[in-house]
Structures are given as C-alpha cells and as structure tokens.
Length: 110
View 1 (cartoon, rainbow, N blue to C red):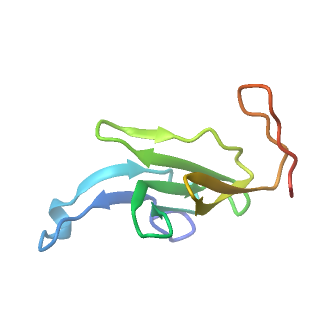
View 2: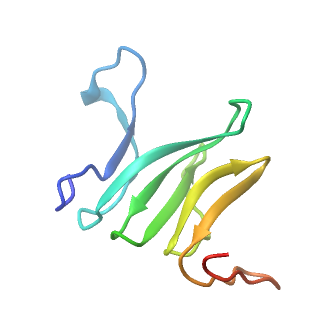
C-alpha cells in the first residue's frame, strides 16, 4: 500500500487462482497516491491495450501499456490524463503544454 493507503502493485490473477500465486506485472512507488490497471476498449468492445496508471501526485500521472516482455511507458506529459479511445486514437486531457518528438505541439486545455 502507498503512504496514502492505496495499492501500488498490479498483479495478473487468473480465474480460480489464489491471490498469493498472482504474478506481479507492474509496480509503482510507495510515495505514489495510487497505481491502478486499465483496459482501453473501442466502442465495439475490442481491447486495444491494457496497462497501468500511476498517480504520482493528485495532479501528475504516468501511464504504461503492457507488452509480452515488459511494460512500456507512454510518452505523455505528467499533467495529462488518458480519457479513452475515439476510433484508434488515444484521447488525452492536457493540463500543461506538451511538445512530443516531432514538429507539433499541443496547448493545455485545448
């Protein structure tokens, strides 16, 4: 549990498997607010990705998607929140300006 009293470890649990045998797939930090898993589904219910989000503070987040060999951190600003999918595009709310690698930048709140 985090210092705030929430979980920071994500485990994979299979049907009828005891929790003690669940496999750890991601670990946040004890200083985080919390870490929780997510599933990104489109409007037809198809799963595009699974992962975890770390609430580093009340206003800062990090996200990873699970790949077969390891979690991969998404290149998103810490003051941004994933909101879901529209088609095959990830919707993100920005609370700070963001310039990812390339020639484009995004303004917070737009």
